[in-house]
Length: 273
Ligand code: PAF
Image (cartoon, rainbow, N blue to C red; front, top):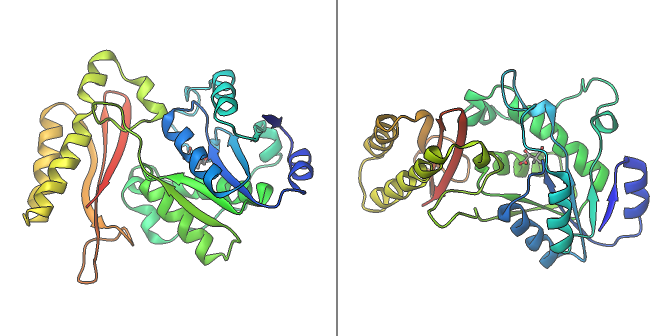
């Protein structure tokens, strides 16, 4: 695997490539990320990944400083998985001056996770667009675990006419159902045992929806279950899977989304119905 730290050397290397698939990450890679690189591999001859912990998408008091940085292990995993090129810039390479130009997103970016992490999606979309402009991939792969992120990136690509296709990877789970996430490593042993409860509640909600039960009471039951067990619930909601808006007459498909804190760790997950 070739590793590049500068925009200019990466661009030079990529200039001869005919078709590339890109998997942007913030590192601390797990099977969920690797699955995305395999999706990329099925689409394009050249697979490019990036590792960059993007300060812009972390709010004040969030975990930017303690976000796990495991560069050597990550390189070994990507190499073993057959990724061709890794872009791993320093912060000064991507933000040589304060990033004043930002991406304005639709209102939905201020709901769900956006309501609890102000500015997060603006910072995420800004770095993703910068990375797209640097790598200029034909395909970019994002995981469904970050459902709202996937939605917003797909919308940005469509509405800004970016010349690439977004591919979605299914959420990869531990044996007990917990969605894989870099933040799982913050959990204490006791919290780790409790953590699959979020997925359990999503499954219960999906079954209740399929059985035709009333949506508001399904979401309330899940929230009460989690809160009763010590979670601090940011949201547990049933939404339109296409628009992420509240369910309306035009809704054809549903998604159940949840975000909740267990101790100091914020976990998110979702299930399509
Ligand atoms: O999902 C992530 O890891 C990040 O939000 C991304 C897409 C790499 C942008 O920093």
